[in-house]
Every structure is written in C-alpha cells, then in structure tokens.
Image (cartoon, rainbow, N blue to C red; front, side, top):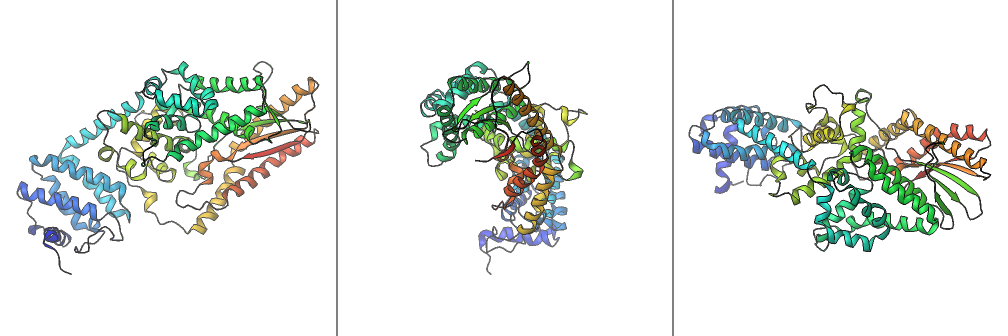
Length: 534
C-alpha cells in the first residue's frame, strides 16, 4: 500500500524507532526534537485501540507501538535531553499522555509505559508537576467554596418555575432552604437521594430548550417525587402532612455534613416511596417522634376495611461483593462510592460550566472526561493507590471533605493505570453466576441486614405496645426495605443485562427475615417484609 506524502515523515519515524535505528531520527537540534514530539502526539492519538480502528489505512503502525522496548528507550533518552525552549511542546505531550492513559483500550503494557514516560517528562521539566499540583489544589478549593445561597441567587427564575410546576416538592424541600443558605453547595449537589436532582434541574433550567439537554432526564425524578407527594396528600390527614413537612425541614439540620445528610435523605425518601405505594383507598398517617417514651415506627396505615397496620421503613445500601481481603476500611469506600460518585460527577460538570475562567477538564482531569465520573468497578482499586494526605488518621475517622478530596484525586486528577479495565472478563453467564452467589452472601452473611432487622422489629414492637395500651387494635406489622438504593448489588457495570439479581436479592432477604416472622408469630403478632422498588 502506497504511503501518502503527508504520512511519510511519521512512517519513517515509526520504522526507525520500532527497529531501534535511532540515528535515523534527528534529536540533536531543537527542531528535530520538536518534530519527534509531534510524531509521538500523533501516535498517542492513533494507538488508542488495540484493534487498529484508529490508525489511518495509509500507515503501517502496530497498535501496541508503545509496548515495544525500543520505544521506551528512545523516548526516555529524548525526554531527558529536551531543549529548554520546548517546554510548551513538552506540556502538550504531557497532557496528551494523560488523556492516553485514560482513553486507551487494550493490553496494559502500552498504558504502563506511557505512564512511566510521563514521569520522565516531569523529571525533565519539574514545572509540569508543579503546575498540575497547583491545578489540583485550586480545583479542590473551588469544589468546596460555593454556598447554597450563592447558588440559589443565580437561579431565581428556575426556583419560581419549580414552585409552579412541582408545588408540593417545592414546599417540602425547596422553600425550607432559605434557613440554611450558608451551608456548602456540594453537600446538596452531591446528595444523591433528594437534593441532587433538584439542584441539577435548577442549574440547567435556562437550557431546557436546548437540543443538547436531555429534558426528560432532568424532569423525570422531580415529576416522580411530586406525584408521590401528591398521592400521599390525598391519603393523609392535615396533622400527618404537617409531620411529613416537619421531617423534611429536620432533614436540613444534617446538611452541614455530607454523609449524615445523605443517610437522612435516603431514609425519608424510603418513607415517601413506601407510603406512595399504599392502596389509593388507604389512609396513611406519618407518626411523630417519641423521643422520651421510645421511638415510633414511621407510619400507620388504615386500610379501607378499618384494619390498622404499622410500617417501619429502612433504607440501607448493602456493602456488597467485596473481596475478603478488602473488607474493613475498604467498605467505607464501598458505601461512599455507591452514594456519591455519580452525583459528584454531575457537580464537577456544573463547576466546569460556571467557574470563571472556565476549568479545562481535558487538561487536568482526563479520568473524568474518559469515564464520566468513573464507575464503582473501576474506582475502588484506584482509591487504594492514592497516598493519603491526612497522615496516619484512620480512614473511618476521615471527614467527608477529606474523603471527597481523596476521591477527586483518585478519579479525576491523576492518570492511573485502570487494572480492572485491562483484565479479561469472564463470560456474561459466568459473571451472572458469580453475582448471584455474591448477592446471597452479601445478604445472608453480612451484619448489615441483621442490624437493620433488629432495629426495625424493636421499633415495631415498642410502637405496637404503645398503641395497644391506648386501646387500638393493630392487625399487621411491616418492615419495609428499599432495595433500589442497592445500586451496586443490582447493577452490572460491565453489561446492560442485570439478569435476575433483584429476584435473588429478594429471595435471600425473605429467607433472612423468616426467623423474625416466626418469633413474632409466637407472640401472636403478624410480621411481614415489604421490598420497595420503583
């Protein structure tokens, strides 16, 4: 095949470096070094895929060009002797290399060599490392800087639109925000259960008519929540609705800290989902807290037959599927990633759009642009390879800010080798079998489900005793678990087919619940398990 004149210089470079004929490449002069750097940038663009689909047909390049020992030898020598005047060209090569480590698809050798070469380039020009470190620090400062009040002041029109379009959602979750305007915005934007969809909708409201914005994706979670709140309002009393309003306002008391805020938000959302699934002819009564006489369960349902049933809702993401060697502290990351990685990604995109001057993610944060915030399967191994900035403080004592800062560095700010993306996966059938076994283990052999059921059944029993003492007859007791929160348990990050994992999980939960049901039956109490899914 004839090589076009436009590609001849690059082809000559490839042949010379591949076969170790370094004398055929001019790296003595600054001009020659610059041409060599230009060739390397082109090759990093062409060799992104192992299947050669990126390489022009007129060129003869092995897709694993960077895995050749002669290539690393040549580049190491080139980088060590670069002319001082080529700093800006070296910076361009460095940034292209960062993107390569994130975008590359193929055996890991090429990525590992590029990663080592980037370190050589930083040794030649320490300013590259200094610039990146400053960019990371500046960005993390920006991440934590904005307040909720600053955000809301920018989107008054959007807030007014929310009040008109989603009135009950606005009344319960948006209007009370005026009392916590000094709180940090990231606590709300990175709250995955209630406030993240609200903040995202406000931020994109002015662009809803744009064809580049998925309006349905923004509106659907708000419409879903509004519909359930409206359903609850038709089925409850004025006093009960006031109790729900009180709970939504009390939720904000936790909003100064990211994780407690998300936990309380998930719990309240679980109650709303459970209440919204009751029969349209039922009456749903949200019960007030009983701080002095023991905690109430969440609500009382009065059926159309007149029977009364108590329900206690629990919302918990199970720590699912971790290898025994990574149990313990690593499980904190399991919950943290499950809860926040997607929402943090959304907040990063918002910051990129609004920060002046605009943040160029393609320069400093290649993992974000390549993996859209990354997924749990890729993230957990990376977290363990980032040196701690908190000294010897145990992970379980880290603040949410320290965890987020660590997470940003791991996912977005360094060109790490993504081992999980390079290891050949078993077949879909084999992976499904593995996930079925891991799901059963996560439910039957972990303390989280026992702890939940112990707390829930104790609250049901205490509330039942209180109602009985008041002369009320309770016919059934229910523990409601929100399985949809268990994203890692239900979803396969490497496939669009999640198989029958939800059914496996429900079966295992019912089997674990059976001893509690039997124990209550001995006390003549009818106890049931509700699995809540939307």
